[in-house]
Image 1 (cartoon, one colour):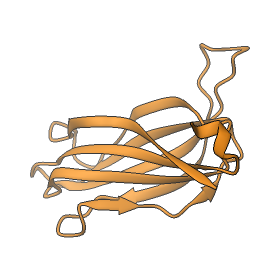
Image 2: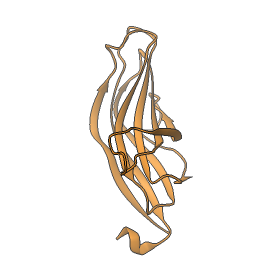
Image 3: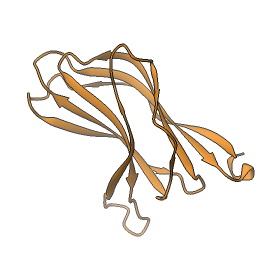
Image 4: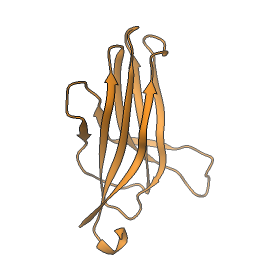
Length: 138
């Protein structure tokens, strides 16, 4: 079984410091990631800088129900895996491999603002995709 790495979020700053207290915000960082030829996926985040003084941030991979028949519609499915961004832990965090039953995936960040302190992250993320057929990933 071969594997392939796809960059889904280039190094980018997400600043939630202006979000109102007690409010959650979801940011779609990547969508319509075609995984039709793969059977397993892992989510890898690289945290370059992180300040969670003002709340929490969660990175999540979800099933994207995009349809070529209706490209303007957004269909967000259940989450496939999540990474809680925590200061002081390893810079690279993986969710375990999971089976890909949907043809498309998306990546979102969910911020929860708890205090007036800064809430931001600089990160990049990849999907590690596994395929049972070596010929499909060349």
